[in-house]
Amino acid sequence: MSAPPQPVPPHLDPDIVALIAALQQEIDAQQKQLAFQRSELEYAQVKIQVLEERLRKQRIEKYGKQSEKLSDLQLELLDREPAVSSEEIESEADSGRLHEGDAKKSAERTPRRKNQQHPGRNELPAHLERIEEIVACAADQCRCGQCGAPTRVIGYEETEVLGMKPAVHFVRVIKREKRACAHCIEQGVATAAAPERIAPKSIFADETIVEFIIRKYCDSVPLYRQRAILMRDLGLDVALTTINDAVLRVGELLIPMVEEMKRDLLQGAYIQADETHVAVQTPEKKGENHRAYFWQYSAPGKGVVFDFEMTRSKKVAEEFFKDYGGILHSDGYVAY
Image (cartoon, rainbow, N blue to C red; front, side, top):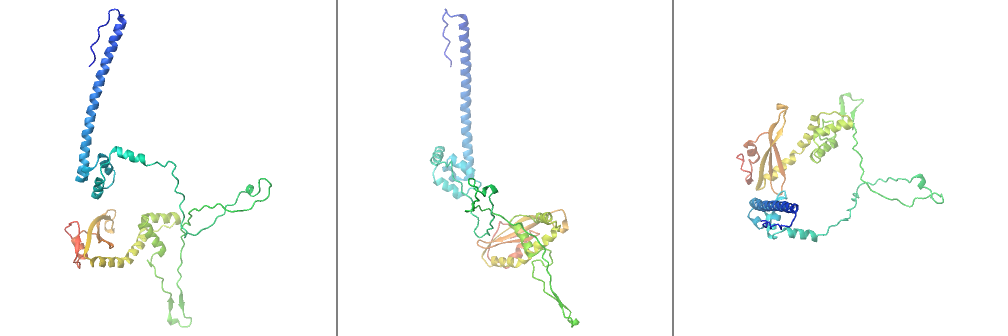
């Protein structure tokens, strides 16, 4: 509240009296504004406190009863983690509350290395072949700048960089001998046996097919992109089905290994099973996707078998587990 105006002495000039009255009105207006802002600030503080309590309650509901022991700062840090286990929450609770002041003091105790040293160049593997490349000095560096006499090499400044030789494609011409007796026509012609190949009728050699497999399953390069690379680099326009057939042939050769992995699983006493759908295309329905399924079977410490089927019918599980007598761990799908 503003103080009551004091009586103006009668000897003051009327202009001064008017000025004092105007200043008093301005002071009164500013005090009212200040009082209003103070009330707004108090309301904002109460609102922030309510929101903080609401946020804390939501976080405690999210992380469980153990999180009640944590400070707001610890709960905020947990929110920044992509996934938090119950063990991590319990460990954080056992470590005691962390407050803003504690975090600030910890940061102050940790010295900042402004001039941190560079870790240095990576050492290149010793087993790689070393090919030396000598860079000669310029002509004016080959003579002494003072007496003009020719200088001599006293050593080298060495730098190692990782080079590579681009893949070189070539056509391997397989010529199988054909032999015949010049005297005994009835003996006919004998031809050398064809060498063993991954895909005997394919235009691709074994090492090319293996490269398709490595790029697809290790480097995530789809076959249609590898086909485009062949067209770009070699001008070889090969059908995608030709590459697919070669890769599928590798899968056929691996079937005995998969069967052995299945036998190993079924001989155990515990198997985990699940299935997931995948979109596929077949010649029967061109341009549209079918829904197929990967049935997955595994056990701790053993391999994982993926069984591709066009159906989710229980017949798939019945066929796989027909001779199994152990524990089956699944998600409760009725087919199991």
